Length: 337
View 1 (cartoon, rainbow, N blue to C red):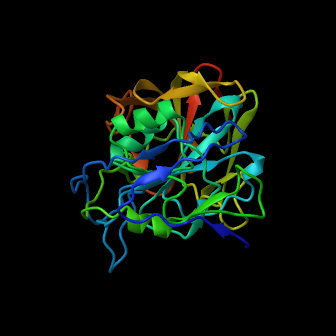
View 2 (view 1 turned 90 degrees about the vertical axis):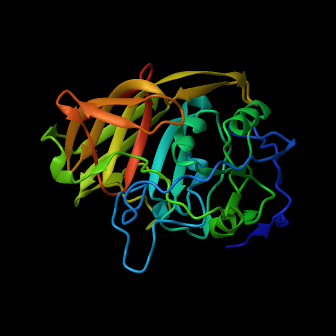
């Protein structure tokens, strides 16, 4: 792979150069902005399990890391193909952005890969996605209004100009920004801590029986639907842009019907920027083992953890790798067979 690396930012120079992206709905601001570190999370949950999957920690390893959860914003259009590093993520959240397409928030904690991308910009929607685990964002930048809100929320972020970022000269901008996540993790070092569990994890046998559902279509808009098929005890994303062999290994697909509002500004192409509201409550559809369990989700604030329930009581997510679909309750849809 041919690449052109940017100058490495020093550890003391936390002002990150946020380059303006010329295409595809990125609103990266040309201003320089310093990220604001978040308070270190308290050690919480079972130290013998990973906080983003609930899976047991292998002998000789610890769930208390020196780096926070790293949440990388990844492009999810045909221009991103092939996506790199998606298969190493612990958890993925898919959210709506302008133009009816989606973007991925890929969570990394138990394993930090090397090269990942293409890296794209943040949205205010990410506050409710990232804040519950005090995650640090890895991004190309953001619009000025978004940067202000991210800072106000106390979320640390690393953007182009920081250690590890480079432009891949075999690809076209803005889809050519990549980063070595291991370099980012070194700069994101904090007091060792274990984040809270991102989801209410539990054993698969605790799930209600539900109903059979071996294919899923999560529609975010008229222009984008993410399709899944259950095969060999896992869910296969039928229209992924991931590199061959680097697909996300989804044990569970969790669909949350969410409200989507207006972020209050336009992208460079003049499209209104949507803002997913990941707080309050709504309908939840949990797909696991080729079956569907219906329930509800609730989140008391942007910073609060997600809670799930059925009419019978609390609902847990089977331990493993989960892909979360934030489908608009107005204009979106979920179908299955």
